[in-house]
Amino acid sequence: MSTTTAHSDVQANAQTSRPPVTQLRVESYTNGILGPSQTMLGPLADGGTLIAGTPPGCWGPMITPAFQGGHEVTQPVAIEGAEVGDAVALKIQRMRVTSHATSSGVMQFVEGRYHGDPFVAKFCSSCGTEHPASHVEGIGAEAIRCDHCGAEVSAFRFRHGYIIVLDQENGVSLTVNQEVGNRLAGKASAMSALPELAAQHSILSLARADMPGLAAHMRPFLGNIGTTPARDLPDSHNCADFGQYLVGAPHRFGMTTEELHSAKTDGHMDTNSVREGCIVICPVKVPGAGVYLGDMHAQQGNGEIAGHATDVSGETELTVEVIKRLSLEGPILLQNLEDLPPMARPMSAEQRRKVVELGARYGQHDIEENGPVTFIGSGVNLNEATENGLRRAAAVTGLSYEEVLNRATIAGSIEISRLPGTVRVTLLCPLPILDRIGIGHLVREKYQLA
Image (cartoon, rainbow, N blue to C red; front, side, top):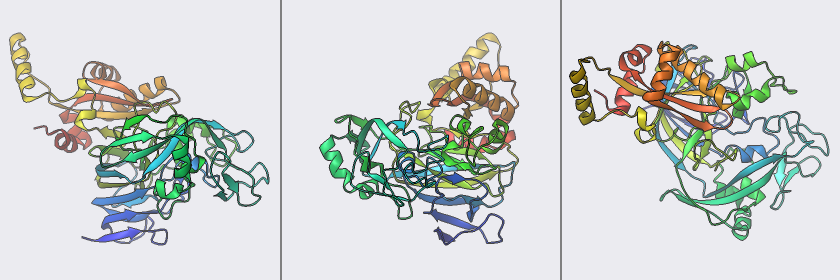
């Protein structure tokens, strides 16, 4: 097996003639920007294994003004043979939280410290420096300081926040009180387990503990995983709901609605079933695909209702497979069986036998062979996201829009992934269609279908 480790000084563009490797470890990050300007690592062979250590998303980058996006995702990886118009299947084999604690909560912006979008275009209101370097002094809401003038510089505050300690081995977690939170803040980077090359400040430094004593299950997943968009944009805005704030924006990532939809790959899904065991099938919009991942959460219910969940450092291992000539606008997800909505779960052998008997009773002898498939839909709100997911399902499968509506109603479901505008559209799709588009073998293997 050929193996390589990817650091910032070991980089390969997708267009180079470097031979592909069968295993690649990524430990370098993009400072909040995704797009063609980012140098790709690799190439990784079709069928190869990608291992990535990721720092937390959201709050850490949010309070670090040098970042130009709301996450800190891995440097993209070129995949051998992936061309524009193809798709790449990412099969998540293993996922592990490495943080010992994190903090999160409901946010508010600090006016006068950003141009149009506090995730993207921060500046120091004291000295005027754009995206200033910064450091941590002490703990609490005013701990983030500008390197140039020393002023407090974070563009974000907590409206209501919490600190939570994590037990990965046993899958449980617990929010803590202010006294414990202050102690954790004193060793924030270690408790967050920030990777060596991560550039963010740990959100534990803000030490906001409004909700002590709440026990919660752990169920880690990746909030941002996919392929490189066709033009540079902030990593957290690689989707339609966050991405809408780029339309007409007063900073260098401003674009039209048409440009956004043409470029994005909808990697920022915050879909809690994107976890160990699932398969994410992603569009290829740049040569080599540029696979990236980040924004691991320790847990989250459907919807990410607070706007943010428990962002953690972690390690993910996945394998890649190129699917030729499968043109997608956004991801397809093959969820774990227990994550599928009940109406879309394959029937048992006994249920199938009863269906045959039912058909015979009425003279219906042809019974469709099918499998579950989930289309991610995104939009500025949930209604637009739902229609987007339904129309993506129709376009990819060739089924009529009306048939997709019927299938999602009686043999599927619509589920919220994130407010305000990311959903899962799941339906049972005929296997011959899935074979034709090139993913039938994945569906059969995933759900053990004959």
